Image (cartoon, rainbow, N blue to C red):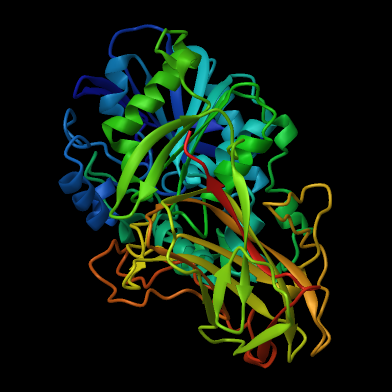
Length: 584
């Protein structure tokens, strides 16, 4: 095989291309090592993933790169940007500070041979072995940190639970943790849009063996997915079908999901978990759950807005990362000892963010406030229901919306959200799509640039009613936790009590604005024009980004198209539980 295995000095760094890392089962993974020119022992920042270590950021994610550089000029400043790569650190901003940066192509992707099995235990074991390989290299000080976005954050939770000897700290920048609940089956509803479209567009396009039919690297002129060029049949044999794997495994008890789930009791390494308020449908739930549930004695939470990748590269994000890793990998006094446990960028309408420091999550001073729905006037208020009521909508429709009156004072909502509903269906099941929304006094909807979609609503939650069974040990009043271990079909016309988890959010709602709850039978759609929001790989989004639950194999109209009725009354109090934050 024509692997580079070449070392050269470029742009003030020594770069070791295509270095081999042998795995215990005989597969040899390939990595690039960016390190200081001077001999010495340095801490390591590592990533392991499927996006192709030689593929320049701009060559597949062109719009994202150019928009980020235009909007955030601090990102390209101070670097030649020759080595920028999707969702991992820029070595030109880390190597001069005395770090070694290692990018490993995961099994079956980029330059690494093998079979792609996305987020598998095998991948987590590979990453743990890579960590311990890096910890004993002659240029290493024995301390390895993991730092990256999305895929490169999600597998950190998994690897940390395996406790590799040389893992010293992790920074999970927007990283889901529970692949069933966070990604593939929201509330039990299959998320085809992400599972199928993402894997095809962003993983299989850089599969190892695409060779001369794939990308040529602007970093070194070689083939991103080489050195071999395989036939389509050979490529097909070298990857699991992520879509079929996820779709066919309806319950969380399947070994497929259980083997991918990190054991929170074993995640003991120092961690910085950074979430995005607008990441509904993939990452933030994992960041919050990981922060709360990990056994680590040294853990911090940071939450921000705007696009999924941007702040990782801004001076704001890089400063946060370097203070964290300088403390734990170098033993330097970076001021991290004074870092608040929770750092929030509190959202205000108009994409305004105000930094605030807290001591815990959820916030201890939260006033958990019930807003009861009233089907008679389609309203929502803090007054419990005094008489029976009901409203019906078609199971695959836009559903119904309950609206508060104008708020009498500025009101901050920050934290997890829950809803209790009483539901009957004309069929044996029903899918509930809950959207928490905010409207201006003239009833224009307030949305945000989300992690992906330019018109992301305030918060979302989902539940398939046959998955309503709660885990009594893990359920909290403000965060229902469903077992997803059996289907409990509905009897048509019978009323069932259901609790819906709505993912955490943050919004300072001005006086005079209104809060709304939509209960839908399908994904949210922004009511205005799509606008010039972020697109990925040619997709135009309409409010939910790629996180669409539109697979007829999972949602046959014969089951999910029947009428759904929401019931209320003195003995069926239906409400939205909001985390209202009083002023400090």
